[in-house]
Image (tube, rainbow, N blue to C red; front, side, top):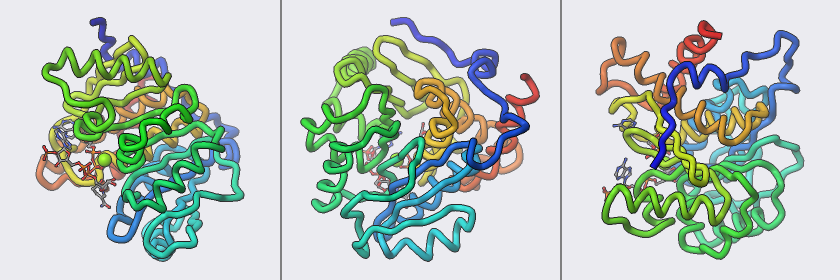
Length: 283
Ligand SMILES: NC(=O)C1=CN([C@@H]2O[C@H](COP(=O)(O)OP(=O)(O)OC[C@H]3O[C@@H](n4cnc5c(N)ncnc54)[C@H](OP(=O)(O)O)[C@@H]3O)[C@@H](O)[C@H]2O)[C@@H](O)CC1
Ligand SMILES: Nc1ncnc2c1ncn2[C@@H]1O[C@H](COP(=O)(O)OP(=O)(O)O)[C@@H](O)[C@H]1O
Ligand SMILES: [Mg+2]
């Protein structure tokens, strides 16, 4: 099994500094479809991380109960709401995003499952699927054929197991994940310590991050970062590799200042600036 290691010099090659003539309209518009009653934090974290990774415009699509939560917690993020109070039931919008994330805090209500199905049948926008979007697909595997080429899936180990079934060894885990990636032509961000990014037979091993990331919402933030990069026109594989690297780097940079225990998902967002600067200084 050949694995490519994401060294800093490899990452810098994939990183594009922002054009001095850029404006919010050229920096991409991302849509984050997330949240349900009691899990609106996932939508807030994901959409803030998206904005703090350079995306020009970010819109959150949330159930009605999330409207004020999103508008107050993230004034820079625009918010549109579903007609249902507590769950998403119909993913329709009149904006033209360049990347869409679905899943953080979404829940798996039947009405939400149907909304995801209808959305996948019609969608042509580059997509990032996380959390409950993956759990729904695990229970409706026939919908996987609706995914466009190079859709990005970001499962943690339990979500991966739901998607590909149990494994008895690391080798089997990789074999099954590679087979899944090839069969559905999707990129799999296999989250863990470390995270591996799998694109067919090609495996990239991330080189940043530490156990400070073992905290609620850490994956929701990663989804926002990767979605931001896709909206800024990074190829899905480059957005995945660079996003995972920057996510881990925030924790490495923060550690001497915060320690492991006090570091929370919002700190990943707080340290994104310093993480990006380390790449800019190398360019
Ligand atoms: N503030 C908010 O609004 C937040 C909202 N959130 C939202 O909540 C929803 C449910 O998401 P979730 O991931 O908590 O539930 P679930 O899929 O059952 O997985 C949990 C089980 O998976 C396993 N496991 C996980 N990681 C592992 C690892 N590295 N290594 C090994 N095993 C690992 C572990 O299983 P165990 O080891 O206990 O058998 C664990 O018990 C989802 O929509 C999410 O976005 C959260 O993001 C939090 C913040
Ligand atoms: N010990 C660790 N070392 C490095 N990264 C970790 C560690 N623990 C968790 N992470 C990272 O934190 C993120 C957790 O994602 P996830 O489980 O989806 O969180 P949540 O659903 O709470 O947002 C992943 O990117 C994972 O790689
Ligand atoms: Mg998660």
